[in-house]
Amino acid sequence: MVISKAASESDLSVHSTFASRYVRVSLPRFKMPENSIPKDAAYQIINDELMLDGNPRLNLASFVTTWMEPECDKLIMDSINKNYVDMDEYPVTTELQNRCVNMIAHLFNAPLGEGEAAVGVGTVGSSEAIMLAGLAFKRKWQNKMKAQGKPHDKPNIVTGANVQVCWEKFARYFEVELKEVKLEDGYYVMDPEKAVEMVDENTICVAAILGSTLNGEFEDVKRLNDLLVEKNKETGWDTPIHVDAASGGFIAPFIYPEIEWDFRLPLVKSINVSGHKYGLVYAGIGWVIWRNKEDLPEELIFHINYLGADQPTFTLNFSKGSSQVIAQYYQLIRLGYEGYKNIMENCQENTRVLREGLEKTERFNIVSKEIGVPLVAFSLKDNSKHNEFEISEHLRRFGWIVPAYTMPANAEHVTVLRVVIREDFSRTLAERLVGDIVKVLHELDNLPARVTAKLAAIAEGEGSSGHKKSPMEVQLEITNVWKKFVAEKKKTKNVIC
Image (cartoon, rainbow, N blue to C red; front, side, top):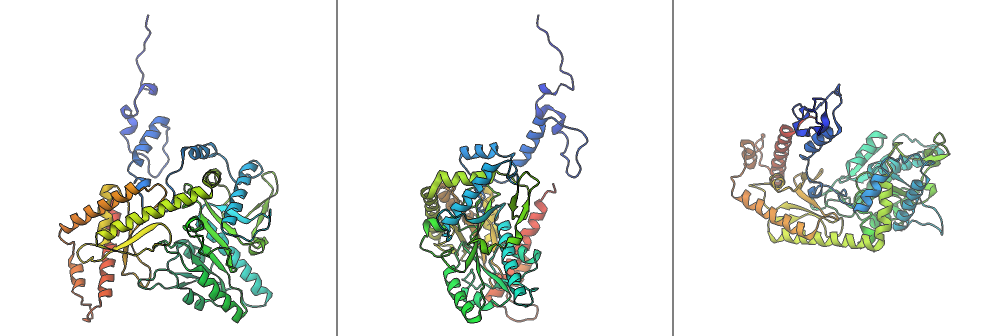
């Protein structure tokens, strides 16, 4: 005899999620719900909403790794419940971090003796790494000035105006004056000569960028070092250099080994690099390496023992996952020098394919350099009818996320599009992107120019004071109007979650 029973309302195991009441109500946005819901319903509803996110692989705005091998994915999941800070409980994980620090230090030509351990630490990214390096410079400078009986309350740091926002955060959070070398039209990185001119007795360091966020260009660290050596001799100062190699640190050693930018230069005292960029690990790992122990003041290192043993720590946070550290070690031993070199050469080649494809359209100026981070930054030769923001917007219809942005101070009139070439961006995708950009250009050419009354007035070239505006002034005003237009459009699309 077959025994059966009618499913009760509480017997949720027989219901499809989409047949349940949970898809008929809005998800909480501000307050935690009073009652629980089944795990499969929670998963399905959240997963469905996440489908509205962009595809990470097609997010060409980001430098951050979006693909790793399945074997490494498994290692990440197997260690996702390990808290890295519990070094006594997870000594092997700690050892793997130390191995990564040593390998990266040797990659950057740190002056280490046989068997000598490198000085460095893993972080959640280059932002934390830069904060730690900056604090070390500030404390060393303060100690020196105190010893000389001089004021030590007005430290400054010299950078280019093209630095990433984390440098501005460091300056503001830790009360350091940020002295920026302004950019020039056609020259979008820090000028070493101008940087050294801005150095004074209160300069804790000069920060050079190996791979500008704006156009991928490497700054001339060798020239900066040589000029600063001379200035230090003349003044008796000992102003050092920090290299922000967030993007370029895992590129230059493999395809530009002849470029001197690292610890081969005597004034380079610390270097940061993002493991989650061209270190080929998912988001959440960065590294900072010091030249030697003397460059990291001992008073900045804390010692704790309440987790089972004496543990030195120099981080801005405490608890963090172990997965990314383990993933970095996997990549270093899995790929080795040969593997990283092959990947970077592939990125370089696909960058060339994209650049040449854009040049063939005869519609763009290429702003990026051939030597640098594998990316292509480009701007329209003629943006009087349609501009870079419109191209960016139209490319989203094809799934591509390509950012459009304006350059910093002194070059605000220049608007560029930027495509970052990562490990998982193949030649086929590069050719497809060029084809989609050509389609967008054709579509825009057949549309009327989106010129508002305000833009039309600007295009006339007359200011409120009646004076004739220069072409640069006109272009800058048009760019600002479009930036406001795009910002307002984004506001109307945003959903508060």
